[in-house]
Image (cartoon, rainbow, N blue to C red; front, side):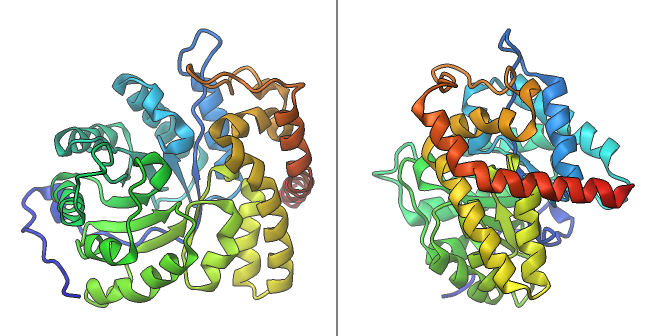
Amino acid sequence: MAAITPPNQSSEDLLQPVTRLPNGVYVPMLAFFTPQDEVDVPATQRQAARLMAAGVSGLVIHGSNGEAVHMSRRERRTIIEVVADTVRHETDSHVPVPIIAGCAAMSLRETVELCHESKEAGATHALILPPGYYAGIISKDQIVAYFHSVADQSPLPVLIYNFPAAANGVDLDSDTLLRIAAHPRVVGVKLTCGNTGKLARMVGEVPKVRGGRDDFFVAGGSADFILQGLVVGGHGTISGFANLAPRACVKICELYEDGRLKEARELQHEVAKGDWPAIRYGFVGVKAAMPFFHGAAEASCAVPRLPFTPLDENGPAVREIQQGMSGVLAIETALAAAAAAAAE
């Protein structure tokens, strides 16, 4: 397969060299709202600070867990600004923490506008879904051209977001992903499709379409296959479950890097068990679990926007969530306590 040579970049932003995102856990943050249905700034700050303290590598704003489709452009910008400001205050490093903003729209024009607005608000990268509204008549060539056009015009480096459920069933195969990845400003992929074979092919083949450069980030999109992705050479995870158990997700990566595979497998089993109700109930289920993991103060802000409603706290869904996540909750609590003791 021949690599696609993109058009020459012209603006100063587009000429800047890109580097691969750091390995590790990236968290697609939930969106928090006040009882008056406004963006809850303090809750957003608390969650961003909590995640940074847990050792995650970066944050994702306006992913599928972030309810971007329920927000105005002004609200979306506000949340990026709040998170970027919190990250600056919570980190001492001079190396910027990646803040990846979901910028997908159905047209090239609006997607590029969202990329510009996100950069102005403090984002460092853009996460882009394929345009799936007209899934029945859009071709692979058109999808590749769309991503390359976004990358040509976006001031932010681009990550591909392959999540068929959020793109009207569009599931990009590895050949199409590699064609898109040939563009030098497409710098990563989030594979929420759950296809670990696709992930392995991307890891093995993407340097060939990028001139031998190791500057492309390949990550699974769910916490139930963090270890599987690492074993085949993936670089980490972008997982909504890490809103609840960031330390456990980070620990899987650390155990793998240390060669402690038996412990990594055992922890992965527990994380996968806990992630299952989160997958079943989506962001509504993750929000319902926030008070269990992070305290009762998070109950009022972790309410989904209409048309979604909170799960009944005494209902079977919440009981299923509590039962399925109890093991990883105990692990997360122990990891937090150990970190606090070590910091004393």
